[in-house]
Length: 440
Image (cartoon, rainbow, N blue to C red; front, side, top):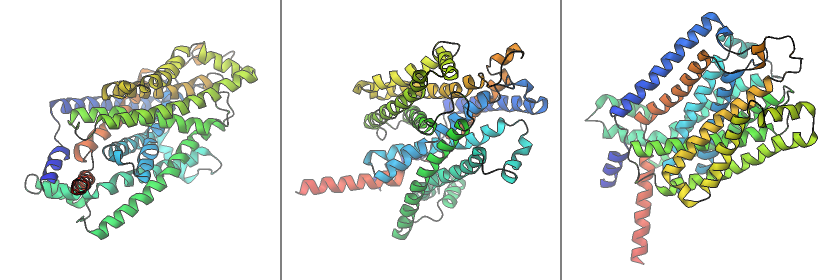
């Protein structure tokens, strides 16, 4: 009982302090500003954006691809760590599940924002053509949302049962909600067996779903036969990039939650060390795919491909390109190869750098290619030769990022960040093992 009392005291959801309230209000303000900008965009049309006949996708699609990539943390981290039964995973997996849910929900919302006529969204379901990867995207995103929600929810059942009892006298209304969410969890052997089987099935399902989601997104680009996208490398390129974005986000969020909720006893240097090694691995894989993506077209010397790559490496997009490659991939690998670089604070800074680089990487995937159309660009307005998001686009994009953070904020307010029941069981097993060793 003492163990449970301590764990409930340490790990039960806590009220926001003053900083938490300010943080939440700030996110809400950014979201409201974005909603105002979006309403104006609906009323006046896409003319309020800087998108045009050439740069017809712009920052909205870059942001969409970023959210889809970040949601991959639910596959690459949660499912793989669950199925391999790594003992160090317990404090990490739920944070990854929360990030995954927030990111994939916002991916669905962001793609709707890009539509000039969102009232016609239903037509994608009614009149969608199976030959189009867009139709596959419409199918896979809701599917991935449901699997991610289930992967978050099923492991929470024992904790909801504990919180139901914990808050019974102090907060009866909250206790009632936890009781409903626990689905009458009692902790019986039959319930545990069903729960473990369910989690295993969902963890297996999310792996192909996650790979399909990233691959379909890659096909949306590669089937358009445009320079910079016309590559058989795109599937692996997107999957490896998604792993980098997802693990980077996990590192940054884990550090913030550790400090805010004082979880140093549960999220330790060991966890950051393991995540650091994992991040090095995925960064190296992504660097390999980047090498394929940019080196081969240069060697084959096709005029259009060479022009595109020169614009990235030497032209108007060069500062962003080298920031993404050096700042978002090479520097993190170098820093994280050293043990001191895998301490919590350096890991947090590297995580932020990786996430920032990952967002701008999506911008570089989308924009430069669109500014090199097949048709001659002569005789078009000068502004069509360049693209940079308008104030409306930035306001709406920042609002979607704020909304993803707000979803994470709300979830960590009411959901135990670290599994209470599992942590208690692991502590009990450790004590039994220590007692056995002492007896021997």
